[in-house]
Image 1 (cartoon, rainbow, N blue to C red):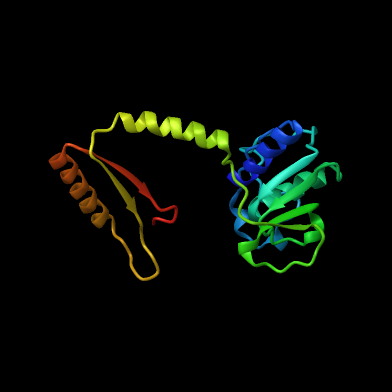
Image 2 (cartoon, rainbow, N blue to C red):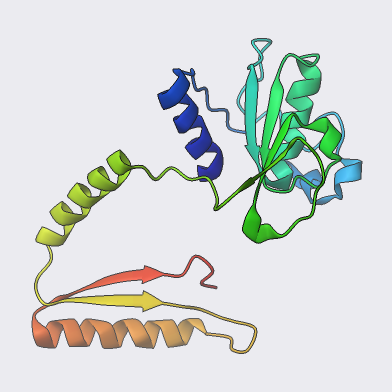
Length: 193
Protein backbone atom coordinates (compact mmCIF):
# COMPACT_ATOMS: atom_id res chain seq x y z
CA UNK A 1 0.00 0.00 0.00
CA UNK A 2 2.71 2.50 0.93
CA UNK A 3 4.50 1.85 -2.36
CA UNK A 4 1.41 2.82 -4.36
CA UNK A 5 0.80 5.79 -2.07
CA UNK A 6 4.41 6.93 -2.48
CA UNK A 7 4.10 7.02 -6.27
CA UNK A 8 0.68 8.70 -6.03
CA UNK A 9 2.04 11.39 -3.69
CA UNK A 10 4.93 12.03 -6.07
CA UNK A 11 2.56 12.42 -9.02
CA UNK A 12 0.38 14.75 -6.95
CA UNK A 13 3.35 16.95 -6.00
CA UNK A 14 5.03 16.98 -9.41
CA UNK A 15 2.02 16.99 -11.73
CA UNK A 16 -0.92 18.18 -9.58
CA UNK A 17 -2.57 14.80 -10.06
CA UNK A 18 -5.85 14.20 -8.26
CA UNK A 19 -5.54 11.13 -6.02
CA UNK A 20 -8.51 8.91 -5.21
CA UNK A 21 -7.99 5.96 -2.89
CA UNK A 22 -10.24 2.92 -3.17
CA UNK A 23 -10.41 0.11 -0.65
CA UNK A 24 -10.51 -3.27 -2.35
CA UNK A 25 -11.51 -6.25 -0.21
CA UNK A 26 -10.87 -9.74 -1.52
CA UNK A 27 -12.83 -12.91 -0.99
CA UNK A 28 -11.34 -16.39 -0.46
CA UNK A 29 -10.83 -16.89 -4.19
CA UNK A 30 -7.80 -14.57 -4.08
CA UNK A 31 -5.80 -17.60 -2.85
CA UNK A 32 -6.25 -19.29 -6.22
CA UNK A 33 -3.51 -19.10 -8.85
CA UNK A 34 -3.65 -16.00 -11.05
CA UNK A 35 -4.82 -17.86 -14.15
CA UNK A 36 -8.08 -18.59 -12.27
CA UNK A 37 -8.62 -14.94 -11.36
CA UNK A 38 -10.53 -13.30 -14.19
CA UNK A 39 -13.20 -10.61 -14.35
CA UNK A 40 -12.76 -9.51 -10.75
CA UNK A 41 -13.89 -12.87 -9.39
CA UNK A 42 -11.80 -12.45 -6.20
CA UNK A 43 -13.06 -8.94 -5.38
CA UNK A 44 -15.62 -8.77 -2.59
CA UNK A 45 -17.80 -6.22 -4.37
CA UNK A 46 -20.20 -5.90 -1.42
CA UNK A 47 -17.47 -4.76 1.02
CA UNK A 48 -15.13 -2.94 -1.38
CA UNK A 49 -15.43 0.72 -2.29
CA UNK A 50 -17.82 1.28 -5.17
CA UNK A 51 -16.16 1.10 -8.56
CA UNK A 52 -18.33 3.62 -10.38
CA UNK A 53 -18.14 4.46 -14.05
CA UNK A 54 -15.77 7.39 -13.40
CA UNK A 55 -12.74 5.30 -14.17
CA UNK A 56 -9.33 6.75 -13.36
CA UNK A 57 -6.77 7.66 -15.98
CA UNK A 58 -4.12 5.75 -14.02
CA UNK A 59 -4.39 2.85 -11.58
CA UNK A 60 -1.39 2.32 -9.31
CA UNK A 61 -1.30 -1.18 -7.86
CA UNK A 62 1.27 -3.05 -5.80
CA UNK A 63 1.58 -6.83 -5.66
CA UNK A 64 -0.24 -9.80 -7.13
CA UNK A 65 -3.60 -9.27 -5.41
CA UNK A 66 -4.02 -5.67 -6.45
CA UNK A 67 -2.82 -6.49 -9.96
CA UNK A 68 -5.97 -8.62 -10.22
CA UNK A 69 -8.14 -5.68 -9.17
CA UNK A 70 -6.29 -3.22 -11.43
CA UNK A 71 -6.74 -5.41 -14.50
CA UNK A 72 -10.43 -5.80 -13.72
CA UNK A 73 -10.90 -2.02 -13.47
CA UNK A 74 -8.91 -1.53 -16.69
CA UNK A 75 -11.22 -4.02 -18.42
CA UNK A 76 -14.34 -2.24 -17.08
CA UNK A 77 -12.98 1.08 -18.35
CA UNK A 78 -12.60 -0.43 -21.82
CA UNK A 79 -8.91 0.49 -21.82
CA UNK A 80 -9.37 4.12 -20.65
CA UNK A 81 -7.52 3.37 -17.41
CA UNK A 82 -3.80 2.66 -17.62
CA UNK A 83 -2.12 0.43 -15.04
CA UNK A 84 1.17 1.18 -13.33
CA UNK A 85 2.06 -2.06 -11.54
CA UNK A 86 4.61 -2.03 -8.74
CA UNK A 87 6.32 -5.36 -8.03
CA UNK A 88 6.06 -8.50 -10.12
CA UNK A 89 2.38 -9.00 -10.97
CA UNK A 90 2.44 -12.73 -11.84
CA UNK A 91 0.32 -11.91 -14.88
CA UNK A 92 1.42 -11.49 -18.49
CA UNK A 93 3.34 -8.21 -18.80
CA UNK A 94 1.34 -7.25 -21.90
CA UNK A 95 -1.65 -6.54 -19.63
CA UNK A 96 0.14 -3.62 -17.95
CA UNK A 97 1.20 -0.23 -19.24
CA UNK A 98 4.17 0.18 -16.87
CA UNK A 99 5.71 -2.28 -14.41
CA UNK A 100 8.11 -0.93 -11.78
CA UNK A 101 10.35 -3.59 -10.25
CA UNK A 102 13.09 -3.00 -7.71
CA UNK A 103 16.56 -4.07 -8.86
CA UNK A 104 17.00 -6.15 -5.70
CA UNK A 105 14.17 -8.47 -6.83
CA UNK A 106 16.39 -9.81 -9.66
CA UNK A 107 13.58 -10.58 -12.09
CA UNK A 108 14.91 -10.68 -15.63
CA UNK A 109 12.33 -9.08 -17.90
CA UNK A 110 13.22 -7.88 -21.37
CA UNK A 111 10.26 -5.61 -21.99
CA UNK A 112 10.06 -1.87 -22.64
CA UNK A 113 7.20 -1.54 -20.13
CA UNK A 114 9.47 -2.62 -17.26
CA UNK A 115 11.36 0.03 -15.35
CA UNK A 116 13.86 -0.76 -12.62
CA UNK A 117 13.90 1.13 -9.36
CA UNK A 118 16.87 1.34 -7.00
CA UNK A 119 14.63 0.65 -4.01
CA UNK A 120 10.96 0.33 -3.29
CA UNK A 121 8.78 3.41 -3.77
CA UNK A 122 7.59 4.77 -0.42
CA UNK A 123 5.88 7.67 1.31
CA UNK A 124 9.04 9.06 2.88
CA UNK A 125 9.92 12.63 1.91
CA UNK A 126 11.69 15.50 3.63
CA UNK A 127 8.34 16.86 4.84
CA UNK A 128 7.32 13.41 6.10
CA UNK A 129 10.59 13.00 8.02
CA UNK A 130 10.30 16.48 9.52
CA UNK A 131 6.73 15.84 10.69
CA UNK A 132 7.60 12.37 12.04
CA UNK A 133 10.59 13.84 13.89
CA UNK A 134 8.40 16.49 15.53
CA UNK A 135 5.82 13.86 16.50
CA UNK A 136 8.51 11.57 17.94
CA UNK A 137 10.10 14.39 19.97
CA UNK A 138 6.69 15.23 21.44
CA UNK A 139 6.07 11.60 22.42
CA UNK A 140 9.59 11.07 23.80
CA UNK A 141 9.35 14.20 25.97
CA UNK A 142 6.57 12.49 27.92
CA UNK A 143 8.69 9.42 28.75
CA UNK A 144 10.77 9.14 31.90
CA UNK A 145 14.55 9.00 31.59
CA UNK A 146 16.53 6.89 31.15
CA UNK A 147 14.83 5.62 28.03
CA UNK A 148 15.65 2.07 27.06
CA UNK A 149 15.30 1.06 23.39
CA UNK A 150 14.15 -2.54 22.91
CA UNK A 151 14.01 -4.10 19.46
CA UNK A 152 12.23 -7.45 19.45
CA UNK A 153 12.72 -10.13 16.83
CA UNK A 154 10.61 -13.21 16.59
CA UNK A 155 10.47 -16.74 15.34
CA UNK A 156 12.82 -17.81 12.58
CA UNK A 157 13.39 -20.98 10.63
CA UNK A 158 15.80 -22.13 13.34
CA UNK A 159 13.91 -21.05 16.44
CA UNK A 160 10.27 -20.77 17.47
CA UNK A 161 9.63 -18.07 20.09
CA UNK A 162 6.70 -18.87 22.34
CA UNK A 163 4.22 -16.41 23.84
CA UNK A 164 5.37 -17.35 27.34
CA UNK A 165 8.89 -16.19 26.41
CA UNK A 166 7.56 -12.81 25.27
CA UNK A 167 5.59 -12.42 28.51
CA UNK A 168 8.65 -13.23 30.61
CA UNK A 169 10.74 -10.81 28.55
CA UNK A 170 8.16 -8.02 28.97
CA UNK A 171 8.06 -8.55 32.73
CA UNK A 172 11.87 -8.30 32.88
CA UNK A 173 11.87 -5.06 30.86
CA UNK A 174 9.17 -3.64 33.13
CA UNK A 175 11.20 -4.58 36.23
CA UNK A 176 14.32 -2.87 34.85
CA UNK A 177 12.33 0.29 34.03
CA UNK A 178 10.91 0.37 37.55
CA UNK A 179 14.37 -0.08 39.11
CA UNK A 180 15.78 2.78 37.01
CA UNK A 181 12.66 4.97 37.16
CA UNK A 182 12.88 4.99 33.38
CA UNK A 183 10.81 3.88 30.42
CA UNK A 184 11.09 1.48 27.52
CA UNK A 185 10.64 2.25 23.84
CA UNK A 186 9.73 -1.05 22.23
CA UNK A 187 9.47 -1.97 18.57
CA UNK A 188 9.27 -5.25 16.72
CA UNK A 189 10.54 -6.59 13.47
CA UNK A 190 7.95 -6.48 10.65
CA UNK A 191 8.34 -10.26 10.47
CA UNK A 192 7.91 -10.91 14.20
CA UNK A 193 5.80 -14.04 14.52
